[in-house]
Length: 349
Image 1: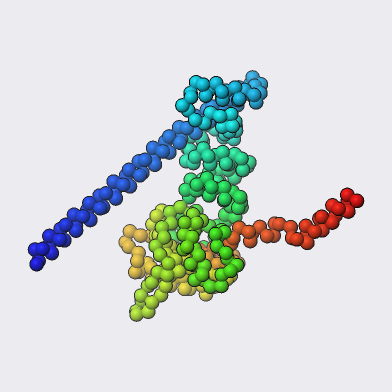
Image 2 (image 1 turned 90 degrees about the vertical axis):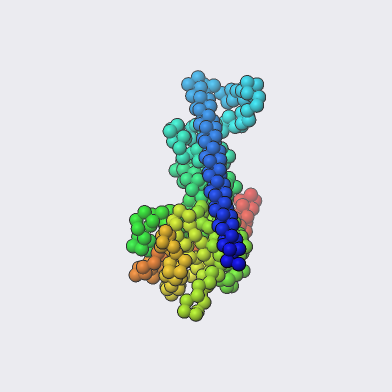
């Protein structure tokens, strides 16, 4: 019986070694393939920039009109019938691309990290250069698809991204603190959840988990979902973490506590308790200290700062809202619209 068990154990170990080796090969292939895709993308963008630059130069120096682009598109299509992307519309985008980014060295590095379709969208929707750079960096860092980026632009995400209240600077090493500040946001948009209908934290948790793909996209790149209501057993008592994540770049667990009301100082104590428990029970020797993220419906910055001041566990406090909620104040009310119509009618008469 012992010999049989020993053989089974050996087979299991060989199987585990094989599965581990297969996973390693898979990751190597995926990484290499992704690098190849981005290399081709970079070459294509550089070509588009060069074409756009040449058109721009000829039009500027020789006074060529817009009609020349129509002729170029037709002639280039005859010369390269197998090549896509040489339509008049695309050539105009190439010209705009070169005009928007006159420095070729810049084109070769950060701009090459996102697709041509991302760039077309940015040229159409974002006129200010500094803001375009912000969306380029965010799209690359967070892996936004073109549609996700459009959503972020329409929500004016660049105006909402502020540093969340936190105590990272005295609870984490400098490099870890700086990275955490780049990753966590001050405000999150949960436009995939009907927030007004929620009465309990568990309802919010259920909606976020049900829409986990959208939730992870909003959190940003690098978050891996570990589980909801994660149980911790301490001296015979059971405690449950709302949402538990692991962040690949930070190399640490992220404990998320949900609140459907305004921030209160006592919320920090509970989250600090969970972080201490996770660091003792779940964290390995190679993991960095766990970080807590408290998500509240609203917060007052100084109340948060005073509450976090003497805690030794890294905690950040962010708020969340649906897109529409932030737009209400910017839109005219029904009364305003009625008054406007009345004035216009009066002027016409």
